[in-house]
Every structure is written in C-alpha cells, then in structure tokens.
Image (tube, rainbow, N blue to C red; front, side):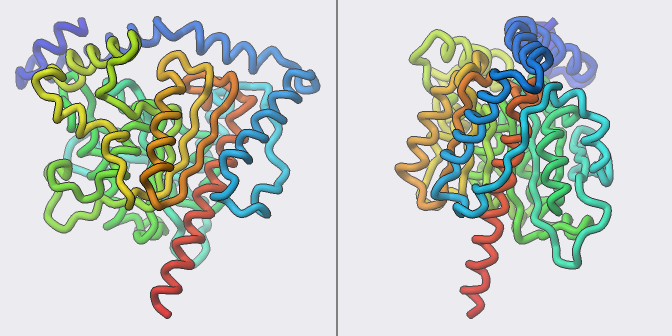
Length: 378
C-alpha cells in the first residue's frame, strides 16, 4: 500500500484518495518496528508503585539532569524549585484533563484543508500580550496530526500564561519535501501576523517539536525568512522565531555512517523526498539542521533519551556540540538516562519534569528578550 501511494502521489485524483492509506501504511510499519519500546516504557510507568525506590531514583535522576542541562541558561533561583513528582500513569491517561486548556480548535493558518491549528491558553489572560509557542507534532514526515501530541507541555505552558499553537501540516508521500517545512513556516508567519487576536505577543514566537516535528522546528528556527524555503508566502512574511525546543528530533539527513542512518536515508529517498541523495545532495544538506547552524541561531533547548531506538541519542549530541561551537545564543541540553522515543506520551516518570524544564527555558528566554528590548529603547 505504501509503494502504491508513493507511485500514485503525482496523480491528481487517484493519488489524493490514496494519500491517507500511504501514510497509514508507513506509520504501521514504523509502529510495528518500535512497538516493544512503547510497551516497555508504558508498562514501567504503570507498574512501578509511587513509593518504590525505582520511582524515587527516577525522580532524582531526571531532576538532576534537567537542572544540569539548564545550568548557565536559566537563572539559579529558578532552578531551585520543587520539581514535579513522577506520575504512575502515562501522560495519555490525562488527555481529557490536558485538553481543558484548549481555547479554540481547527483555526486555519492557510488555504489548504490540512493547515489547521488549535489554540491553547488560559481563559483569562493578563492585559499584556502573552508569549507564544508554536508546537510541531511528529510522525516520520508521513503523519502531521496534532491530536494527542505535546499535550502535557501545551497544558503546562497554557497554565503559566502562554498562548500555544499546535499545528497540522501536509505530509508525504503525497506532499513531497519541503512542503512539510513550508507549512511550518506558514504557521509561524500566521502567528506573527495574527496571534494577537488570541492574546498572544506577535513579537515573541518560539517553536517546539517532537521527533520529525523536532527536525522541522529546528530547521525553521535556523532558516528564518530564507527565500528558498518560504513556499507560497507573500513578500514580507516573517518566519523568524525567538527560541527553539527540539524533543527527540532528527537533525541530520546526510550522514550514512551507520546501518540505522543508511535505512533512514533510504526511507527519505523513497517516501519523503522522492529523489536520491547521490543525485541531489543539496536537498538533503539544506534539510539538515546540523548543516544550517550559524552564529545568529536562536536559543535552543534540545531534549533526548539515551534509550531512544528510533532516533539514537548520537543525533542530539552531535547537533548540540555543533550549536555550542558556532551559535552565539543560549544552548541547553537535557539527556535523559533510560528514556525512549515519545517518552512524553508513554512515560509518566519523566514527562512532568521535562514540561517544567521547557517552561523554565522558554520563560528565561522571554525575560531576556524583554530586557534586550528595554535596553534598545533606552
């Protein structure tokens, strides 16, 4: 079914009807390969009693690495907080509770039916415009749905007074690269122009994403207003962001130094890009966040688990090393011992602490920007 959808993607009628089946087939193959990891993470979270030594150790370890990863970026006073205890249930269990913070659903940020976003925010905002986070869901570039993804983080930030936008975007195989990225940039431009209607500050827009969404968030942050990647946006559309959070993301589309990376590039060639890397190396380089790092990169926070079998942690380590060597902005890195892919969906022991860490990082960057603006006025 996946091969059929790829082959027919260029057909205007048939290809469109097969689009969801191709995405479902690709996600099914991916999910079957990595199902054991999700089951293990969920079972560990469910079965460990609240007072167990394991849960106590997990809490201490998670909080310690979070604080270490934010040290030098977040003020020491803000790090000296009572971090949330690990939850005995997976975050999925709290879906209905999280969704109480959804303010508006299915807002259009573009003309295509897939270009929708949900607005998360408190019912009552202060008079001052609220900082904005745009969240990009994952799905191996073949699924770009906002349902169930990032809920713990979006709810946490909304309750801290943020306006959050969780988006859908167009995906492969029907929509080839770089359509994914141009949709993300369209959402950023929409936020810069329209988020004040929902109480958000158009002058502070951060972007975050998980898995493929982490890749898209990072690349969007590193290529602001790049004319080759603006898609159909009008002249003057602003796609710059003020901060980036990458959560178990993929940051290199070029490297084929391991068997896992060879398989990944083959998947990109067949399903996502539709072109061979050997014939079109420039496409894969332009799509690699690690190759786009520059001194004026926005502040970054990168979070990854050491037990991630979908995107090995080496991706994050190399990316962060390059960021710290080149960028003049703040760079935080939290490496979670034992955490797997999509831990924020399955692993209650770590999710609350990571939402807290991201909130601390983003609030610090927002304060820094406010100070910079004040100095500029003076």
